[in-house]
Length: 437
Image (cartoon, rainbow, N blue to C red):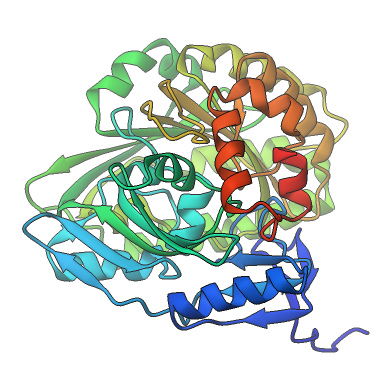
C-alpha cells in the first residue's frame, strides 16, 4: 500500500534495484556474537548473510533468511603510526576510516570515488580506485579476522593461514564474515587535481603516456559525443590551491548532482533529447585545478541514482572495447543518459581480484534509474568477455560459475577454501550459487 512503512525486515540497496526481506536481523557487538549467530544459523539449517552499506548493484548482499549487520560491531581500534598500520572493525565505513586516519597523520594509498561503503563490503567485492601502480583496496590488507561457516574465529595474514588470506581479501562474503581488518597505510598526503575536457581521440592516442605521467588518471566519455572529461590526481607537498566552498558546491553539488539529476529526469521523459543533454553536459564541465586532502579529492558525493556494470580488461584491450561500446550505444533502441567511466589499476595476487595477474583498465557503464539497461549491459558484456574481461563483483553482470572459472586462474583454489570453511553453505545466497556454483 502506498505510504505504508516497509516491514522491519525489508532491505534495499542504494540503487533500489535489489530488495530482500529477511526472517531475522542480527546486530552483533563482538566477534563472539558473530560466531554464536553463525553457529546458531548452521544448527537450524538456515542461511546467514552479512550486509554492508548497500552500494553493490548485484544481489551479492541479499539475505534470504538471516541478515547480519555489522554497524554495531566493536572490536576496538588500534593505530600503529610508526608501522603505518591500522586495525578497525570491518563494519566501519570508509568515511569514518578516512577521518580516523587523518587524525593520526595517515591515509590509505588510494580510494574509489565514494566513501559510504563499509570496509568489509569494499574489500569483499574488490572495490578499487584508479592508479596504474596501485591495486584494489584489498591489496592494502595486512591481516584480517573472519568467522567461518563453522563458527570458528580465524585470524589470517600472509604468514598465518595464507590460503585463506589469499581468498578472503576479495571473498564475496562466501567463506566467512569479516569482523576485523588490519590495513597498511601511508603518511597523510595532499593531491593536486586537474580536471579538463578533451577530445576522446586525443586521450586515446596519448593514453600510455598520460597514465604513466600521473599518480591517478581517469576519464569519462559522454555518449553521442567524441569528447571526454579527464581527471588526473598527483601528490603535491602543499595544500596551496584549495577549492573554494562556492566552487566546490557549484561543481560537485549543484551541477554534478542537482542539475544532472534534472537533466536525467528530462532525458527519461523525452529520450530523444539524450544526445543533446550529453553534449551540453560535457561542455558544461570546464577545466579546474585544485588541491586537497587525499580522501576528499578521491571521493565525491553521488546522489543521482543509477545502475552500473563494470569490467576489468587487459589494459591493451581498452581501445577495442571503447570502439565496440560506441557502436553498441549508437545501435540501441533506447538512449543512454550516463557517461562511461574509465580507470586503471596494477596487477595483484588476490585470487578473485579483477586485477589478478595483470594490469587492468576498468570500463564502467551506467544507466539512470528507471531507464532500460539490460540490452545495453548484455551487449557490452559479450564484448568484454571476448576480450578476457572480468566483471566487478559488486556491479551488474550476467556471468555464472562456468563462464567465470576460466577467467580466474585460482578459481578452483578459492572453491577449495570455501568447501573447507563453509561446507554447509551457511553464507550462500542466489548470487553466490550462480557465480560460484
